[in-house]
Image 1: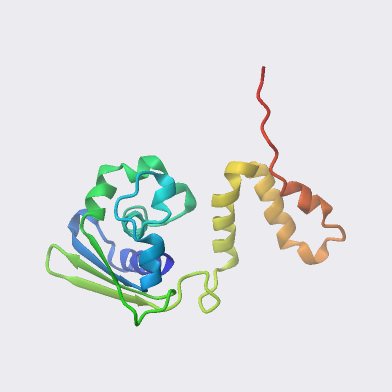
Image 2 (image 1 turned 90 degrees about the vertical axis):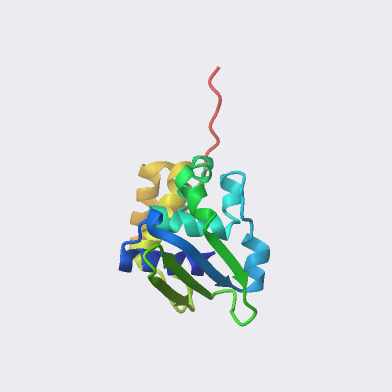
Length: 181
């Protein structure tokens, strides 16, 4: 899904895409991508993680595809549902799993195109430290909290100066919440 999401994020930023102005979205991906993430009608947040259709719609609507947006309430959002119905996905054997061709047709007749060869985070297109930090926070704060997540980031930025990794390891431990009686 990453190349599709990246292509749509780029087009969204370059052209200030309005979801309601979109006539259709055509996606071309490698056949394996269709097998893994070809679910056109996810039933909840977990299934949405395996839906190119949802990932594409959420990228256009929200301008990101962070882990936190793959939630039940987003899957059932009427705007997301309407946009997903205008998305078609085709398997193209000439594309690698890291590639996607994205075409957005607007209601005014404009056609926008993006070919993504390497998605953000791929060795050919690495994330910046700020992007890594944002992704880490999105994934970690729910389990670790903001304070511990900040502590981990702080220690990572000083990793070469740390004499002992034990404090960092302790911050990374997810503690079970106990039930109050």
